[in-house]
Length: 394
Image 1 (tube, rainbow, N blue to C red):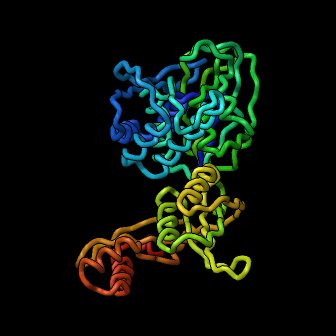
Image 2 (image 1 turned 45 degrees about the horizontal axis):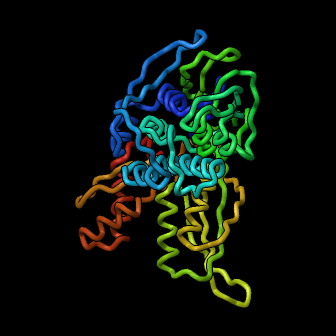
Image 3 (image 1 turned 60 degrees about the horizontal axis):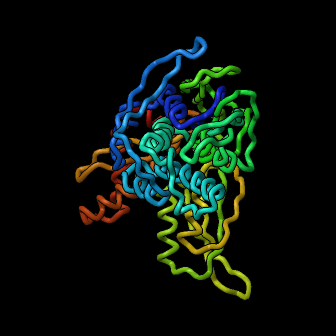
């Protein structure tokens, strides 16, 4: 399972986050292609630079001069209508949601109505969405980040000079561990804080989990700092062992129709939950009900818990940490006389022990041909056994 650990050596900002992930191996061409699905004009460029003798990457977003402000509702619509990978879109919306809540608290405005200034600019939208797409391209199943550094002084903003750290930055990081520095400038921006909070669920720690190192990327900031190199480092690795930690979300619902609950499960899965399901239960006074359950990664707790509540009408969601032992998984595509079908293969200690046709493909072929679904399943298993190379079958 791939893990990304961010080390905010000099700080964290949107462009530094995007640069560190591209430098760690995310394809800039694929990031740019995904970003062009957004309804905003921009040009993204990258350049190699050196910070205190360390080779790093800097990204630059060029866009037409714009003065229009965007509220959270408008930014969310831009992201949701772009056809991005669900997990990337979800993380981006969550980052802007956290900013909207923070700005709303600072200015006394409903988060939906918050009009972003600097953050609403095209370059900030590109930084946030691009970072989420890059994380998805690295196939990051989990993310951690060290405590973010807080500088001092003042920073120029749309409302005039503001103290450093910015009020919105501190609101985003409420409840999170931070570290204070003597750096006389802004080191962590509201965008950087919201991205890291969205990625990690707001839990920051210097201790990265044990992992096999795969790649390292350095994102360069633009200012020269006095006390640290202005770098954000992204460390990509494979977590040790087969175990993975997830969080179980649960809500008891007794006043929603079955089709509503079924749709909620489908939407949770589409939004990135590794698994989601319904359990029939009996509540107080003998009322029949359902428990809506979803397994989620730590960084997705708040986003998917809110989605569960919106879709089902539940007024609260329980969180429980769960461990799991997982098999190694991969996919193969087999050719059948009537079409192609993906097969999911599970293995333990290098030996395959199960080959399961993908339901979506098998169902599509059954509908197309009129064959029973069980027949398609059987044909796909036989085809995998004959078409897969011996090393894949074990």
